[in-house]
Length: 634
Picture 1 (cartoon, helix red, strand yellow):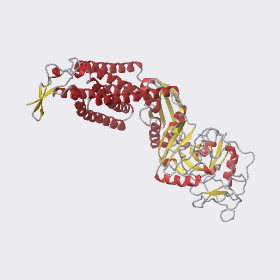
Picture 2 (cartoon, helix red, strand yellow; picture 1 turned 45 degrees about the vertical axis):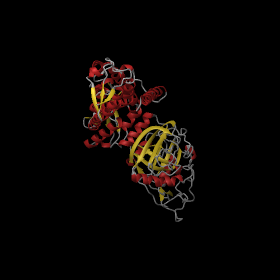
Picture 3 (spheres, rainbow, N blue to C red; picture 1 turned 90 degrees about the vertical axis):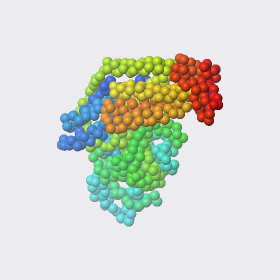
Picture 4 (cartoon, helix red, strand yellow; picture 1 turned 180 degrees about the horizontal axis):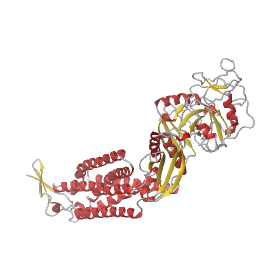
């Protein structure tokens, strides 16, 4: 490769690095100014350096019967909820064999504290009727789509289904079941891989007038009060059998359930507890968290345990542009995905203003979302969208991903705790890093002369990237910097310096063999690159294994070690090598100045080197201005 091509390639690589830095700085600045929650410009600290809040949770069970196995299971689930990535530095332990102590750094969000107390059992059910959260003054006569009071064979049906029914002497209402197994809400923005799948709707987790907008969204049932409820009379009602009913089965709604729905008041204290106690075969009357809507729901169609994965993040529209809202993405397992596909096919065929077009997600006795269905979802990928904050979305995703607790908890006490180490230990830890960095700088300048300045610049860049990464990860994933993490950063100084030493020594070896520096840089890099990659791969593998098999502070150390190893690769590839390539084309370095660190005589370069085919390469007594050697035939 000629000098011009080498220079152009090196400059392009440095421009790529500059673009990366601009993106990181721009992202941090935007997150600090506009994001909710606002990003801090300094790293978040762990319990040992900042302190935090300690919560004592007591099981809320009748009769007080709690086994040690249940407590251990709850500890594992709570630990994953508050620190699923292992970098938030939360401490979860048992207390007295029954209670659970949860220590979290900083000031935890109230939504996180509430999520720790809930068992978080989710079920997916179809919506049979929707009304305002207050009881209706007079029950409407008919359900939407119902006609007459006869069953399929034209005779009155006295059949009741669902364990939650309390009975009734007159015939209950029925609606066509089809394959209405429950589901999770499909993505309103069609972010699933199946291009035919798209649904959205009104989020009932907040006030009903705050539906998430989307170009492909249907508005569910409109206003809560506009969807008539089932009749509270003793007359049985039955909907017309639609063409979208695949099996023609009926769900029987007992008259007592209808009466319960009509008189249900979301403002009472026991509404959520009653919905929580319902079984999978029960009809459920439940409200949204704000009490603006009440729902009559079918028996369970899909269990929350069928969720294979869950995560939260910014919602995007069909064009890939962010909407400014948070979406909780779900992925259902194989059987539930098939059930969901059948359900979405039936629901998408229903009128958009019908409650039958909506499906409900019941979490701990509350309908957190009840969107409408626009299209068939065939791949089991869906999302819950609404007016979540980032913290609320993450808390919900963690609840769904890590499973339900064996029982709910009540908060027994909450108190602030002081740092276990304090400012003095933090100050000494920082001093240890500064001293280590200074020793590396002295060695580099002594060993490599002016080339050692490249080492210092590379270390400074690595430190900057590590700082940006820690701050951004703290904002997005609650990464907390502990003393163990600081130790990992200090160890990384040696890892990064090792890569530079391998590269520089390989270039020096090429110079000793009689190659001019401009050629030695490329040849040395080609041979050093493999060694650097293997060395960093071993370090990264060790960090990953340590992270997976350890807990608490050791996990923090492993995470920082792995993070800085990746940063080392970025710095060496995008900064160190391009800079050395450009320096080799200057007279100071290219001609081997004695202070450049690449002087052939100082390195003991061979005066004459056999290069094959009867030819030798000789170093001139006085380095020429071109920086090249001469070759002659034997």
